[in-house]
Length: 245
Image 1 (tube, one colour):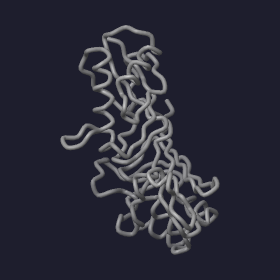
Image 2 (cartoon, one colour; image 1 turned 90 degrees about the vertical axis):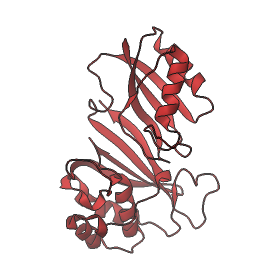
Image 3 (cartoon, rainbow, N blue to C red; image 1 turned 180 degrees about the vertical axis):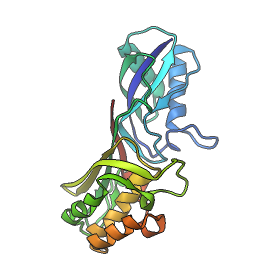
């Protein structure tokens, strides 16, 4: 058996998230079926980040083991062939040793959240971003988010269904910038709580809209309870960007 690491890109809307579901078609199911069609073997994939329904990926990473020996280019192309017409692409495949694990070997995960910030919604990007018609002040969002950097209790941004043993996480960075009509938030950490990035985005949006002050945001964060945070930003704006190993 040989172990392979695959980097994936996918459009999240048609899927019930990464993980296999009893009711709903998942990215994991589509990928495992494609690998089986290529190699004739039942395969289990292990992923760096289990994205929710509607969340996209530009650099998701998983690993799997197969008996069939082929070049990594052949494996990549064969899986992509069998993935059609699903909006999933294997960008590259690399053979790794048995100590590599897509989830547990990860040192840092990168996420982006995209807002479409203009008076009218987008005909093209409605499934790829969150439309916010009121102008966002990204300088205020940057200033408010500074209190999130470092090791903290992130209970204010922790979803009710989170299974993490502790709400304490270390946020390595968070920043905002504007590209045309888009406002982009990017954040990095070794790991995140369930819905943490979307809850941070939904709450920082209030600061950008000037509905909350920077002090309001800080007070909500320090309250360490989800009821003090803003809404959960829609899944359509979230992107799993890359993993560092």
